[in-house]
Image (tube, rainbow, N blue to C red; front, side):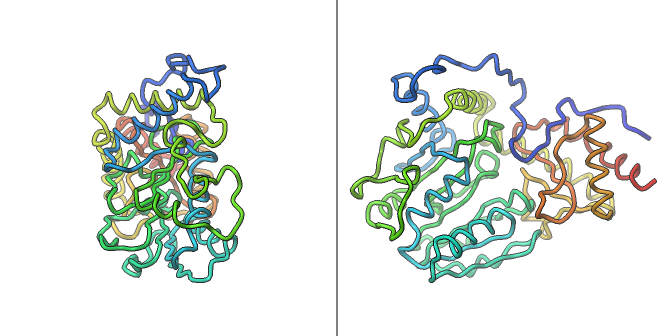
Length: 371
């Protein structure tokens, strides 16, 4: 039978992601609009975005947080162009964006001392291959595959290389071992449901030391330059961005950070996401026609939850369209390069009650397209 209870919020997109519960754009603090980002109020807002991020994430002493252009992609490419080449590189990929970093390293930077470890969707490569003498590039959570790194035991505490972690769909949604990560990137539009186009770059003291001791052999565009005369531009990590940001987006991000603080911090956002995943796990466990794309239960993402169904790809497309037409769930089709299936965002801004309401509709849609 057709369910009667609908999700209050049908926005299950994996990016840009749903706004926080209770969000109202009219409630944003907009005193910075029309002001220069270099003004005292503009710079103060950007500095607060950096400092409050560090405070909420409980980053180790000496870690720096900065706002950079072009979302998570910009943050990742900025740091790869700035620090890679000093040591051999081990790059691990198991989904679309991780494979982009492989392509950047081999095809654009054209580094020669590279070992690439690539796995199919649903699996992780052998992370034990990571060499502590090498720089390591990897994603923490495969946004397009629903496969996450279970732990950081494979990262050496005595490493000489840097660990560069694309954590865009993990930060604020998963517990991260900061001491083992030298560079972390993410974007506002994922777990916190912020706006696009801005990236966040977190650097450990070891990453700063590399930046101040290494000159890459290729030209660096202005928006990639973190140092001047081999000295870190500390202003970037104190509210003086490389280029002009949207102050409206900054106000939106600060609203999201204040919400995190209000609900109890990162432990609360992680718990919300894990509770959402638990709903889907229970649903999948009772049905033999739907499964997680992740092969190992310990590696199932709690933010970008990817599912396979025993339907052909066209039937799955029909399911996705049917759920959208009923205003049940928008944008839940699998990523274009991933195996056909569903991808349901379960990050902290999603209410558990909405995931619970969605599940019967997925079964209804599945049965409907078979008739």
